[in-house]
Length: 274
Image (cartoon, rainbow, N blue to C red; front, side, top):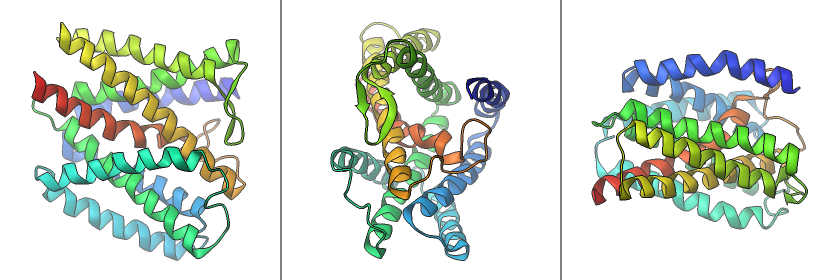
């Protein structure tokens, strides 16, 4: 499984990096928007929407929503939606502490999980647009945000495998350990300092960026755990089978869904303070 995961990551990483650095924001937002719609397809299935036609309707509605939000991306509304996403991820902490909540396959619970999916997918897409479309090295900042999550995930895997003893959330994700969490923070810190230095961030601003990176890593872990909770309640191992060794698309972007709004909001605050 590790070999398969590694080969898949090695094949996909250069493509993603090239897309982030070379494409204009509209093109990247279109591609990532399509990926997030597919991730929402998987989220809806985990939420209890078994009907493919109904899931298709949800995807079409969200595609229209993305188009409308692109038109107002520079308006305060975009930041209100990103803020709503941040509030949702804070509320998700309480959900993780109450494993059984929402587990029953009722219409009400399905509706709640779909709303949660909207608050995960839409703010993350808008955050990407805000970061990548930034006037000052927006493409590079977007890549840094993604590298933070990738580095955290990789460091968590290897430190957890080597040093992990205490489970982080045994009922939700039995393979995650507190050692892996510390490894994720360490990996994110290294990437933040190196990336910030290359982007010309110095002095107190570099310290603020480090704090933002650590917050982003914590959010990425939260996003991973919430998706794991959805899978446990749906009694499935992966959200899909799209990527060999990696599961479905939602399995690949769950951390980014929570991390991007945090990074976008934090980066905007750092810019205001500079």
